Image (cartoon, rainbow, N blue to C red; front, side):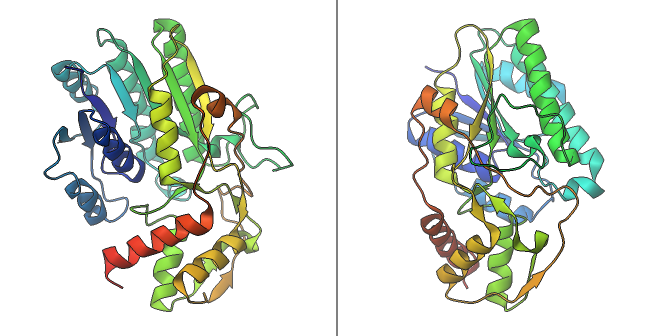
Length: 325
C-alpha cells in the first residue's frame, strides 16, 4: 500500500482544499495543524469537520515547530511525500507579531526539512512560499519571473518566506532530496481566510458597513482561485526532480486585476454597493502582483481556469450558505 501524504496546515484554506483533492483521487492523507487563533478557530474546525466520515484521512493537532513531533509522525507512518502549507500568514499581522513568524515560518520550516532529510526513501517536499517575496516591484507588461532577484522584501512575512526558500536550497545542496517551493499569488475562494480583502469586504458590505480601501484603490492583485492553486500543487507533487533538485515555481492566475475592479465584481455578485473609504498604503503592502506561470505550465500543463467573476460568485454563494445571510 502506498504511504500516506502528509499535509501540514490541513485546517487552513489551501491545506483543506489540497487534502480533499488528494483524498478524491484515492490517496491517504495525514493532516496536521496547530489550529491557532490567528483568525476564527471555528472556521478551521468547520474545515476539519468536512473530512468526517471520509476514508483515508487522519488528523493530528501539533505544532510543526516542534521537531520531534513532526519527525516522529513521519517515521510512524513511513511518509515519503509532504505538502507543507502550514505557516503564519498575513503581511500586516507580521508588523505587530514578529515572533509568531519566526516560530512558524522559520523554526517550523526547518523542522519539516530536518524530518524529511532523515526519512528513508523520501521522495518529494512541496512547500508554500509567497508572491510577497518579490517586494514592491513595478508590474510592467510581463509577469514576475522566478529567476528575478528577491532581495528587497517589504514585510517580515515576505522575509520569512524568502528565508524558507533559502533554507530549502541549502538542504537540497547538502542532502539532495527533491523539493519544490510554490510562490502563491493571492489565493481566494470558498473556505478562504477572513483576513483577506475579498472576504472582509463581503462581510462588511452585507452588514452595511464601510470598507477601507488601502493605497487609494491603486493596487492590483493576481487573484488565483483555490481550485487552480490545488491543480498546481498536485501537478507539481506528482513530478519530483530525479536529481534531488530544489525548484521555485509561481502559481497564479497570470491576470492581475485592479482593486477597484475586484470590488466592482464583488458588488455585482452581492447585488449591493459598498460604502468606500479611501486610505493610504499600509506598511508591508506591495502595489501589484503578476505571476509568470510559464515554468509551471511547462512542467505540469498548468492553466488557470476560473476567472475572477466566476470565482467570486462561487465564494459569495459559499459565504451566504456558511453564514446563513
